[in-house]
Length: 616
Ligand code: M6R
Image 1 (spheres, rainbow, N blue to C red):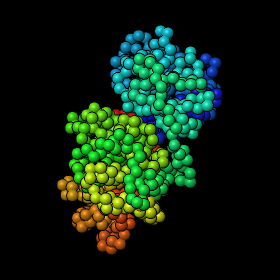
Image 2 (image 1 turned 90 degrees about the horizontal axis):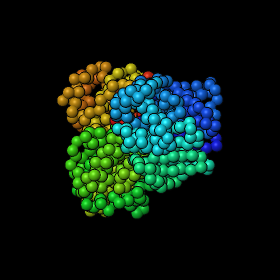
Image 3 (image 1 turned 120 degrees about the vertical axis):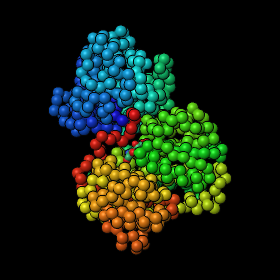
Image 4 (image 1 turned 180 degrees about the horizontal axis):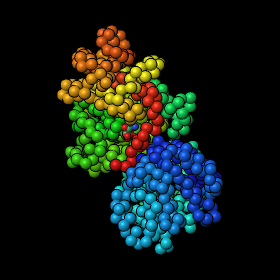
């Protein structure tokens, strides 16, 4: 979580840092701060404020102008210490010469803090991060350079970290470290200037020439260059690459919220993703980034799919694709549970991770286990060069463009497409799917952008329903088969952006407990489309209504029976069964969005959440 940004060059650092923080605000918005180092070697100036970047901006505008071409900035998702001005980063050492920002958790901070206090250090904040500033200060006081001091300090920290640091006595220098999977550091190479950030979003407006630090790598940047080191201080050459990300897709444009923009972009996101993964005439797959994993698909005997949150729901849908297309056992697991079990893996297991950001810590830790076991790994990811893509043997990229709303929307739909194509490729490599079936399944994809566009064309319907539905404090979402993960996704969307309690259940489970919740104040959203075991869902609907519960049903166009049974109905076009989750999810996104608006919630930055979860 947390976003970090650094700049060194001829321009004033403060506006660049603040813009960078705006680009990273989706990573955390409990507080924000910047530190600017004058080129003269004078004191490093720090401004920080609880709350969103707007508060920091006001503080910067209203105070003594911050002058200097070197600086670091941070947007926080609080772990240790409540959100407050004092706990906001950057943090400085007692002497004020060393200033740090940090993403991660210093797991042994209590013992370090006790040791530092005993040595005479005084602490200003409740954070774990402040120990880093004091430790670095100890080292530079003993004569080490900032870069050396950071290396020595990280050797004493437990946990995973991304850190940037300044030392007043080294004007024009920023030192950085990446340890473990708490979050990445991207280095941006400019013309006479250098950039550092948690991810590309804050760099791409300045340069597309970048390098990603790997675990255990350190960096020192100045205006004229970038030096990278390993833990022992040996120089290493960063792997530079030119990234193709389109910054335009990060702008909100005409839309009130990023989430709405991203919902409306889904037809284009689907068409770009599908266009990049298949050719239609003659029908063929083109999974260009599969790399070394391509050769291992044919030997795959089992698939394990992993993800978190919305990406886990995509993985649940993907399981069915692998079973059907490749004819092999497929399991799905929550990466945070998987990593703490003793999972049985071997070289014939294909591990498929789904992570739109490619930065989710639990996914990365699960991947480390899979690598140790020698399993082949493919990751589904929306960010070229993200961490998961560097760990996996190969990737299937979604082409959704940058997703800024904390609630995942377009990346879910495109991840499902990517899983579908990967499962087809596995089935083909194993000789399980016939050429005719393969061709038909590929052609099926082509209708998706149009089908989703037609659901979005009716977006007004949700606006009309929302006032009546927004008064409820609890919802049950029910689905069967592939509609079960859709129900879970519907519940997740609703709870995260409108703070309404919502449960997503396999409809068959209803009578095993959840039905006890049903009354007039506990409505149900039932996914009762043609392919979702419709007749069984009709029974569920009747049982809910018999207990006074209101029902909103998602049905297939042309269904004349269910609309007569329930209070609210939304129709979706009839598409092939395996692709229906992609279309059926869209009404649930729109509904959550409209209900959240009705309840006055901050749709793009819901409370307590961050877009990317890089700490446990
Ligand atoms: O970047 P990832 O796909 O790995 O993120 C996983 C989850 O944190 C994410 O899907 C989260 O559940 C959604 N933002 C919820 O809408």
